[in-house]
Image 1 (cartoon, rainbow, N blue to C red):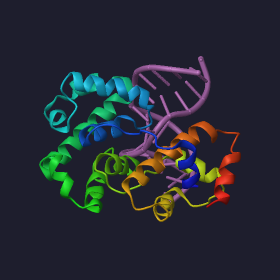
Image 2 (cartoon, rainbow, N blue to C red):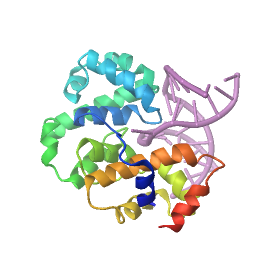
Image 3 (spheres, protein in one colour):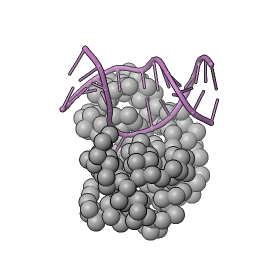
Length: 200
DNA sequence: GACCAGGTCCTTG
DNA sequence: CAAGGACATGGT
């Protein structure tokens, strides 16, 4: 299945930016299209707030204003502040996180209010180059459609057991699944899913 | 105007 | 534990 998607789509760009930008974007894109996140990131850059350090120092209403276009803006501004506080208080800054083991980072991220499994894995995989596969609603929809009865909680280890142990494979796998599911695994047309399932 | 988008938390049964 | 609601803006 992974191989088929890779052949179908090839290398596709997915999540640009440094660790700070990925962490911020990971929260802003919750239940939200990426096209609505981009202007918010541009606003943050324009106002010098596109780093957790700056967000930690900024006032909440100021954050709310610049991320409004992503929806849930009050909730998300609060989550950004919570993440910034966690990174500052626990590690002393983003740079210090680079040497922390993945499992430990993940546990820390999950302890932050507003960061669940998908957001944590997005940060680890795309922000800190750790092999932690992102499982989202598209992944669940596609596998379900393919007749794979594993619950969402088991999909992560299932896919990770099949992936090559390279960070690029983890990054592309999620990107490919999203691209595929968006285009072909809508309500009706799910022919491809079963075909892929047959191929492992 | 209805419906959905790269979730997560809180409250109920 | 599963299900339902809240959070909110922007695009079909």
